[in-house]
Image (tube, rainbow over all chains, first blue to last red; front, side):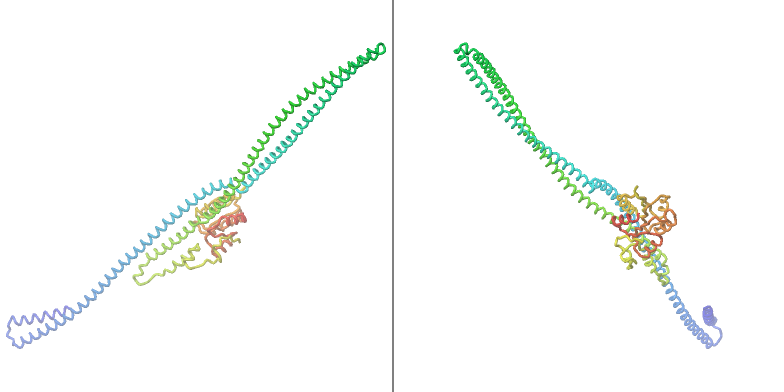
Amino acid sequence: MVIRRFLFLFVLSAGICALLIEAPLSSALVLALAGVALVSLFWLMELDHLTAQSHVSTLCELREENQTLRAAQINEDEFKAYETGLVDSLSYILKTLEACQTDIDKSGNSLSVNFSQMHQMLSDVSESIDESSVNARHNSITQVLRGLSTAFSDLWQKLEEASRHEHQVIGALESIDNRLSSLSSSSAEVTKIAEQINLLALNAAIEAARAGEAGRGFSVVADEVRVLANRSAQVGDSIDRSVAQFSDTIDNLSSMVKAEFAAARDSREALKSELDSLLADVKGGLTSMENDTQVLLQTQSQVDHAIADVTYHLQFQDRVSQILDHLMLTQRDLIGVIRRSHSFVDGAVPDVRYIRQRCIERATTDIERELLGVRATAGNPSSNEVEFF
Amino acid sequence: MSKSILVVDDSPSVRQVVGLSLKNAGYQVVEAEDGMKALEALDGRRFHLIISDVNMPIMDGLSFVKQLKQKDAYRFTPVLMLTTESGDDMKQAGKAAGVKAWLVKPFKPDVLLSAVSKLA
């Protein structure tokens, strides 16, 4: 480059000097010099053109290099933005999953605590309506009721027996009354006989008086017979009065007994009616209690089933929490891969197959294994049966 | 006197429902949230049965059972694993560690109580 410029300046200076000094050289020499200068000029121009082309080419190369570098710079910036965006998104998902897990754990724990309290209260209630204790109480009441019924029946039989005795008493009283009437007739007969004897004794005394001295002894006998007849008449009267008094007493007693017996019968009937009503009420109450107990026992059975069902489903929190935990670990693996993926620019794609392998290794639930397309080695994992070793 | 059972699970809700089922059946229940806490909870006490999860932080269930079985006082204490793990390989590892029975979550209370009555 320096040589070319030197030659160009030399020839140009020589030509100019030749023209300026107008030396006495032949015009041919001047022309020759001018021609040489002109050729040199053209040659130099050609050289400059080639140099310029070379410069242009270099410049183009430089520009291309610059453009490539700028493009690479742009790609790296875009990739960084892309990487940042992915990491941010995954971080957001990770935090959301963490928040979900915390929320599920909190709600699950709260549910289980509340459920425990409810279960305890229900257990306290169900203890009082436990089937065996209810049946025992029912049997006890039934037994008492049977005893009461038997006692009432015995009482009623005794009252019926008493009623029969009443009739016997009344019959006996009537029999006494009849016998008293008979006795009264007998005493009247005695009085009548005494009167007749008295009349006969009087006639005998008259006849004895007529007989004179011979009938004196007979007169004494007739007098004694009259005395006896009078005494018989007195006894007959006395018996008659006594019988009449006794009959009155028996009549009064019979009336009183009949009245008492009638009152007792009325009371007995009333008592029987009340006892029957009471027994019917108690039996009705017992039947109602039996029905209520059956309803309670059925309800208790339903509650027990519901409790077992809730106990079963409340375990979702443990399962979901485990799955979320594994998901978060996988998210962290992904974020790590993205952060280490600058080698993408150099064209090397990182191997991420280990992430799936880690997922498989972490999987502890049937849901995860199913979603990952792998099966547990057990034949029937969810049979909910205990396997004894 | 009622029988005593140690329940080891990192999930409070599982501990709650297991404890509830056992208490209602008349058992005494002690709870621990991981294997390490369970070893601390032993404290020389006698347990008729230990129910443990497998996947737990700090110390998992199988490590806990292995350490338990090294203690003379608990060598013959039966252990029931209650876990979401259902794989045969894991069950075999449990059996080798000294586990007596395996029940997969979620469990039904009557199934759990039936197993407990056989083991405790």
